[in-house]
Length: 368
Ligand SMILES: *Cc1c(COP(=O)(O)O)cnc(C)c1O
Image (tube, rainbow, N blue to C red; front, side, top):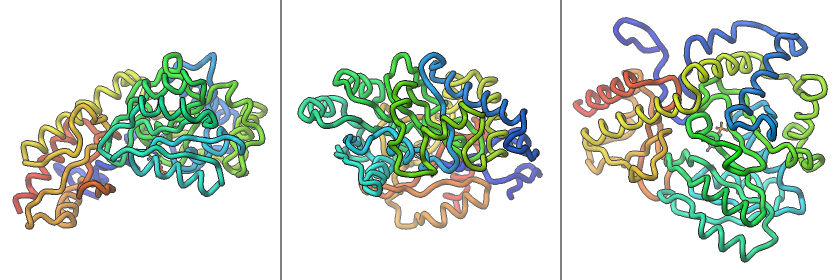
């Protein structure tokens, strides 16, 4: 707990997740619903429908929710959509792309990796030649915003290349979904995954897969995991409105509330605008204090910003982190091989005032 102007509150989370949520989202959890409660079944239906609406996929797409953190649904996407005799090409420019590779190794799925440096977006033209050379690749997997650095990958261009070659696209949009537009009428994909707690500002505990209906229908029997079987989860929800195993009821109640707050803010446009403003204030302010960003502005997504560790021998990250934390701001270490870095997020229920507060805190800690 931290004190600001006499008020006690939890620390502000300038991290890639878990993230700060609104009081009203937390309050929505103060109920115990049975999984067969009519109200609960109705809320599930509404949540799934709203998520499909975000990609304008009412006539073409389905939403399958899944218990667990975001990685659970990334793994579920790969094991459901890439059949045992398929081969997935994974575009990697950070830790989350590498994680998809590891998932394929665990499940013995055939894959190829194409790798770029962490500070460069993946390249659709290189993908184009690779797909032309290798007709055995059935699927392409890409990370929308690589949270490792905060870099934005060119999703639309990747999707166009994949579609031109008649292959299937799988998207990890975990850290971008809700803040960056994905219109299913414009960007063709078989499956996209995200979670309750990133840009949609619910509490952590569940992910969801938005899948093309026809692509989902042919995944029956593909999953080599019982818990991660999205096809069966979908059939269960369609048949009787039930999740197959204990649903994260409180998390779903909070998510429903979070989606109302998302709509009230103006959906993707409104949410994206707040985050872009947060990001701009943070980057400008940190640059004024002498910090440098890893990425040039053109590659930066308004999600999380990677700063280079200052050269100054007096700068010790642990002291910096602890100092900020005492003032109520939690930042995140870097996760890079190319440089010593740390990260500051601009997503979650944070606005301009929190960004300015964080900059004040940075200034105060540097002054010590
Ligand atoms: C947060 C995130 C995930 C999921 O991480 P969990 O810790 O399992 O919730 C997956 N991919 C990306 C790009 C992410 O930012």
